[in-house]
Image (cartoon, rainbow, N blue to C red; front, side):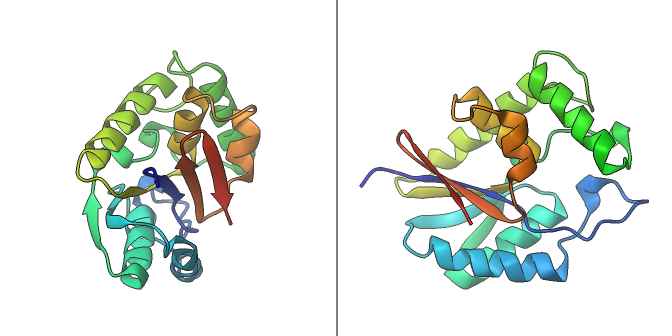
Length: 183
């Protein structure tokens, strides 16, 4: 069996309007959903779960790791597309910014880094994690950077539609040319 890469979007955070999204904690419902997602990941050969340092992602990784008996390793390269300068925005404005980012990845059109910059950071993190062993790779990350990566890898036909439809949590399983999204 060939190596599989499992990219996990964090569970539902506790949204706090006065707190940057990068600092949001995992909600209690998000923790339960993340633990439930672990049942779908039992057949994989993970040595550990790598996670973004952001609290909602690290909490998701901890919930999954506890169910699977794994350690969690923090990797800063798995953090979300940097956009602390954006602040709290209503959902339509976030969606418009993400649409611009996905349409123009070479330019800084939303937030503090381009799509290209976050792709390079994420791809380097994935390579670091893959170099750690021969088993399957599990990484907990975020919706935007996950979408940027999959789009760049030619896995998506409509990146914005994928981003909008991606649940919290969700697992994207890459096995050779195959891609499966759970749940």
